Amino acid sequence: MAENNKTILLVEDESSIRGAITAYLEHEHYDVVQAEDGVIALDKFNSQEFDLVVLDLMLPRLSGEQVCQAIRETSEVPIIMLTAKGGIEDRIIGLELGADDYLVKPFSPRELVARIRALFRRVVTGDEAERGRIDLGDIVIDTIGRKVFENGKELDITSSEYKLLYTLASHPGRVFSRMELVKKVLGYDFDGYERTIDSHIKNLRAKLGDDSKHPHWLFTVHGVGYRFESGKEHHDEPGSSA
Image (cartoon, rainbow, N blue to C red; front, side, top):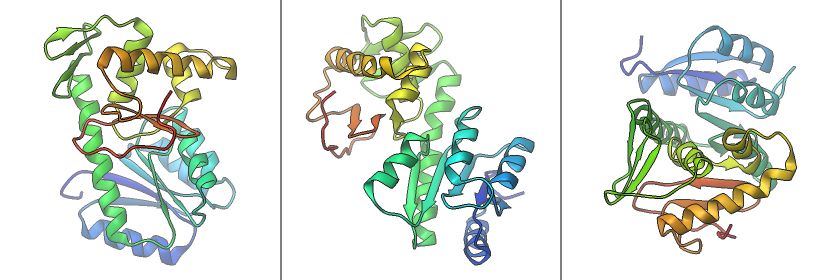
């Protein structure tokens, strides 16, 4: 077992790339389980626990998109998607499917490791949620009492606003599509309610004092949905108003 007890599922059909990535990740003390196509990837994913998935977009039998969708039906495990296509539409598709990050080939193994470490740092917040508290400095989310405090003062938020903030804050940095948030927050399953999320985001921003043009917490990802950031350094996204 690797020193850090983190196990990564690597899904890549090109054996040379798969071997090179595996060697680098194992050198960084990660356990690596390999899969050369989409069907094998899902079989392995369903047979054991993984801490992260590195997923190629172009795969035999089942595509990376199909694998990502299948994983997201049952798991919130971090997913880094690998793609040979660097266009904005290709990146948006991956993020809409539930991928947490993406890398365009060719890429440096060092960059992949840096992205993996960043995703593992985000998971810490999810662990805090299980303990009953997400501490974001000025904002604290009481996950047992389902309350939100800003500088010690309880905010007057609705149940839907709480669910939305909790979902985003539990996965800082991850981009959620509007449809994902609809399903998680409202439970509805059709497109007519996607823009309802925009209204909830607008209300949350007002209650948190978050400026949509220069956000501190709630960021719009143009054409996709929203992400939550808790760090000190943020970068504005185009189209940052709900």
